[in-house]
Image (cartoon, rainbow, N blue to C red; front, side, top):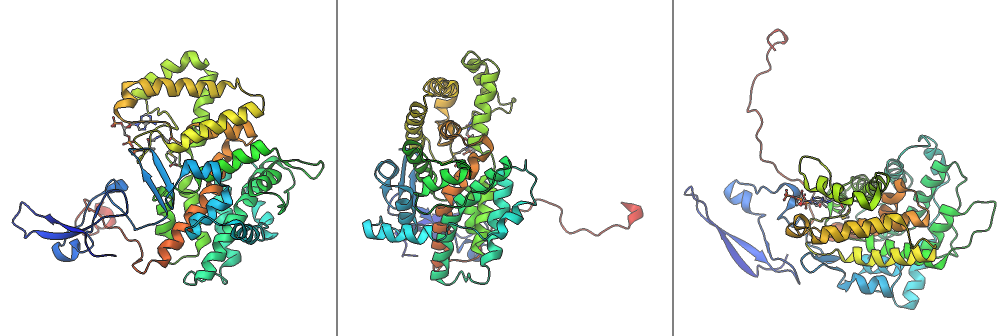
Length: 436
Ligand code: CMC
């Protein structure tokens, strides 16, 4: 850690001596107060459940300006990456810190595609699941199972081993997601095709069958690739922090990524795309646009427990830049597939319009997030609703592994071990059974 840019003084009203704390400035974003010596010098902890004011690490990968609605990967705006680059270039950027030139891109693509197959044993592992198991349950299991195949060959303290683990994960996630889908359909698995693009190969493994030729629609291929770019990283979100915390014990990196998959599943995080589409379908079934007003009343009623899924974000207090790009992709895909009048798209536009003008949402700075439109695109492409979060996991894997590798190569890295404010019983004696 660099030297302090300036100092903050912490004083107490109970007569304890005050303490000086170093403050650091990042290259952009809020300054941070370094409290690492606080416990040693005062015997006190800080209290910040939900990490509302806590920077858990130092990172150079992704930056979000929530007020401006800006997202940068290694300094590049998401809009430029989504327009001018493809997913594998974005992976290279996140992992190595720079955009590849043509030969570096060709080399990286070759190194990733060499790892697209999974061990044939994986299909037997898959058979242990019920056919109707949720794909995220399957994904948590499958990614965790990868650790068994590479445990002895993966030393996380060896940068080359970490790099191979990163390439394996990026390459194998599409194969695993497609296997989970094929298993639920009772169709044969399709082996990867390394002559196709990353997104094109995923489409092939999802939608091709051995019985017929399958050709990749370039508009859908580009849309999927954009979905992957938009979801590739998002600084210290819940699943990424989970991966970092899990990996901080020195565990197998595939196991740490499995922990990220498990965290992502929740509806407040990656599961929001599935929850959002279910919400749209429910409103549609109950009367569609005519019922939007009634639904919004429920959302605003705190006792109803109803939320407008795909809206709101811990960091963005402005339009999520990914949502804008996703809305654009949504239009392109619907037009390509002749679904311009898709009722769910119309419904989501109506919901968005009302929300953006309603004081409840305006005063709380609640805007659409990436999940508001991504479900509509994925559904139009033919991806079943319960697979949406699996597609998110596929795309976020590069962010998880880049962040994990950044943590492990940081000389200041320590096992993550938060403290607590204990408010339970003080020491007491176990009473004999007859007296309980
Ligand atoms: N619908 C209705 N009210 C909302 C919503 C929503 N979607 N989101 C936040 N609020 C209200 C919330 O009730 C609170 O109101 P009040 O101040 O009166 O108590 C206020 O807005 C602030 O919300 P919060 O829950 O304190 O904010 P948070 O930062 O803890 O939660 C969130 C962020 C994303 C979990 C939340 O906005 C939410 O649950 N949204 C819906 C789920 C969703 O779309 N998640 C995807 C996030 S983006 C993709 C990803 O990162 O995975």
